[in-house]
Image (tube, rainbow, N blue to C red; front, side, top):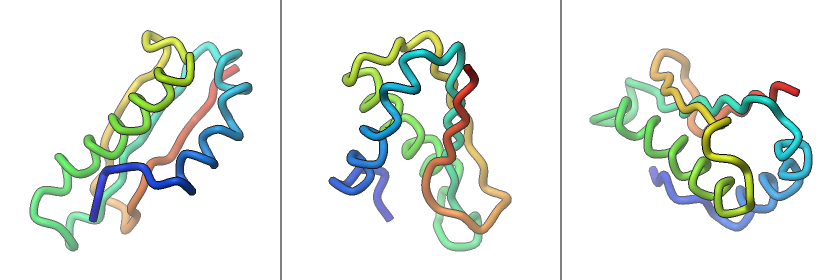
Length: 84
């Protein structure tokens, strides 16, 4: 399982960039099922950091993006919370 964003992931983020630029805070929750990978904490963190890097490249202020990791739910990917 990769932390690298694919074209579909980038396209989905691109749809949210305008809204994110006006946000006061953006929370990125990297997810990885602890039962399906050797180091789920690292994988969760890497997924969230990949999204953060992409958003910063798109002009979102780095200081308003906060990153966390979740290994307790059977999910893979990054959940985004946008606080306006």
